[in-house]
Length: 364
Image 1 (cartoon, rainbow, N blue to C red):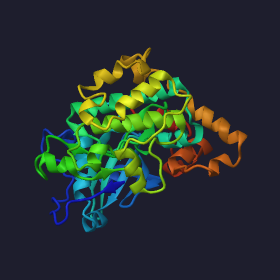
Image 2 (image 1 turned 90 degrees about the vertical axis):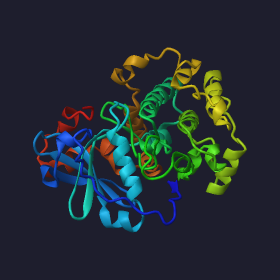
Image 3 (image 1 turned 120 degrees about the vertical axis):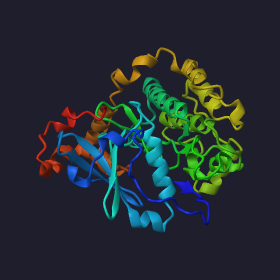
Image 4 (image 1 turned 135 degrees about the vertical axis):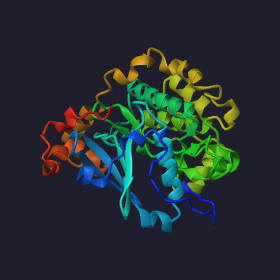
């Protein structure tokens, strides 16, 4: 992720206490000892994600543990608090749910849904190009998640396949709101300055950000266009050896539509990857995107209740056919658990039944 925090800014008080009775997490206070902790699912620069078991209910969660000292030392307090505040506003099946926050002397803890099938990125890397129906399905779920966060006046600003997890039923969970902009938040910086903060990932950065213009909700639609392209081709539209060269391609809209793309796919990508955000598809809202012919035939109302494409089975078969396949792609730890089977095994220390990953839904 690329970011440029404001130099010299004072960090807000580091606390996850939720003392306001109106706060979404106020009525569900928890502490560290309410959970049993299993193996590590993933690690970041200042956080570790572990499997956690709620001692009261027996349910499984992903618990993100953040190192206080590292956060303060590296001026990351703002991003941690933005993520907490943004997630606490969300209640949607396509967005990771923040159930509780708490802290101890050394760490902050976010208790989140357990999305046990890993990142969408791994399936793109292993199986792309997706067929049109599969790309349509996941693009639609991503769009519904974007629609919800925009209704809550939040811009995600770092939507990419690595930040889209798949739950036990292979439906998406959008994660990582540390780069988000909460449009109603006036406490840390003005909206205009905050919207210009350079955050995101090079291959998905919208051109308006590179031009130092304020970033609006249309930035998330640009990212959607990049992901549709990537699902249908296996690579991002603006691939280059360095960030600088990627940015040059983005600024000049230098990408090529593969010949096998359908006319509908080509059209929606071109309309989402428009340099001028005021002319980008979605400027008037998500309904215009939903009505595009690329999405013809979808049941939007029941999408998250429908059967998802069989990506997991397809990738498992690919791994069986090619013993070296598993080593040729970047596979995160949670993804390995899904295909090597030890999500149950690694939790044996928690005395969880082997069927528990199926019996504990991530949808609350």
